[in-house]
Length: 78
Image 1: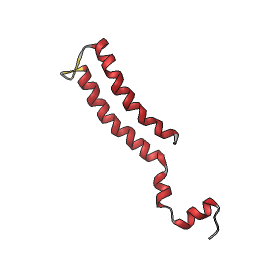
Image 2: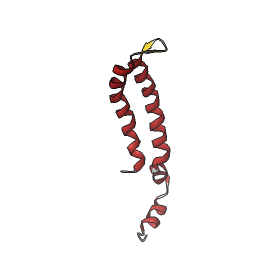
Image 3: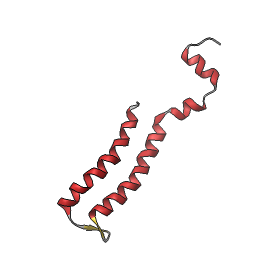
Image 4: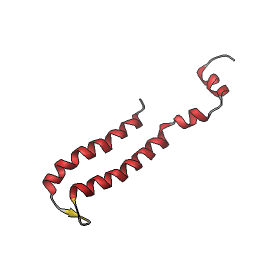
């Protein structure tokens, strides 16, 4: 597992912390209860986190490389 994959835990932790924060904050944001606003914001931020993970993952470059490049990189003889 690559270190960039650890970013996937961020939205999960944020969703679980939202209930605790809502208990202590108790205000309204944009006319909605805090917890609903928190969940909507993190729903959108989850997409941003996934885009960052996709960009820095590096598996796209490995998949698009020709097979000869992969053999040369692995040290296998053709």
